[in-house]
Length: 403
Image (cartoon, rainbow, N blue to C red; front, top):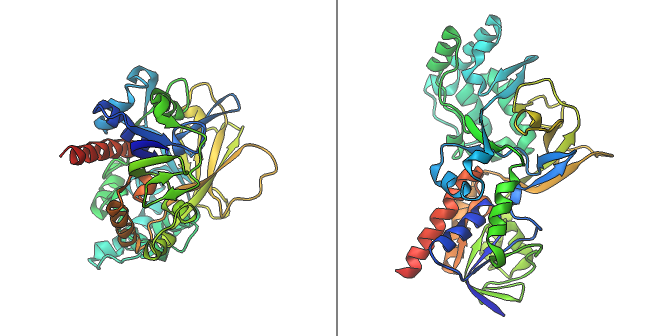
């Protein structure tokens, strides 16, 4: 039985960042266990049609998170990254409009602008009505019936493939906030208004896929990283993993729903975990290079199965073709070509999720199990946020143990 102070389940961005912070602080008694042969989680890349393709869908490094950049640049220096100003488009009314739609209505013909503006003026938030609790109702309340019907509702039905009334509104701080006044001003001035969306400026490797930096971080851990090792058993009381590794503290970054089949959980915790929901996404590669300058395009048309297109030749040098992202429930059978299914792609922000995940994490903490990353906290987070949260969690847990 090999014993460690810390055993980290999963070598995604948060687990890797946690591990390297332990090393930076002088802690050597830890192990990451990863089921895949390569570190990186959803941010891994593979060579497809002679160029890198990010198997988890589009992943890009935001330039605003200096804490994350400082760590990642140690493994892939800034000189190996290319900087881009984000070009993301939305297909609506037969046109491709810059994202976010409400900040770029001025790109539409005048008649269409008036149509959308009139609808926004009648939105519940403009009329001073109380904010609704469900995501579906919030969309119309915030943006008006036109944007809801022609973009936000169909797009979100596609990506989540669930009843939107079951999703809450607590996570909407991630979406750009544009007021009716700003929207009107942007149409009159013919320029965007409001908050710049996430990844307004982003970095992507010059000579590899996004997975390269995480691969290097994994290799730098040496014997502290155990790959190609699925978790098939967790003895919670004794903190024993797979019958072979004992920990003082377990750091969980894998989906809680996987614990249902690999551990003996108390009934209340089982019930809470069973309530957690997630979306699976299929990434399909197509060899055609699209005639677009966009890095990615949002597609709300429900007659098409996919919800987003990534034009990789516009950010990955020396590549061609594009890939689509489709909720697995909507994906059609693929007879040929490359496809990767991400079973765990997005946590679903159901209305009761905040309470449910708090209960799970509270139980975990009582049992010396720390919850970390997208799946430990059941919250969608970009990779830079996963990195900074991994760093902060390691410093916190070391501070508490030394205290």
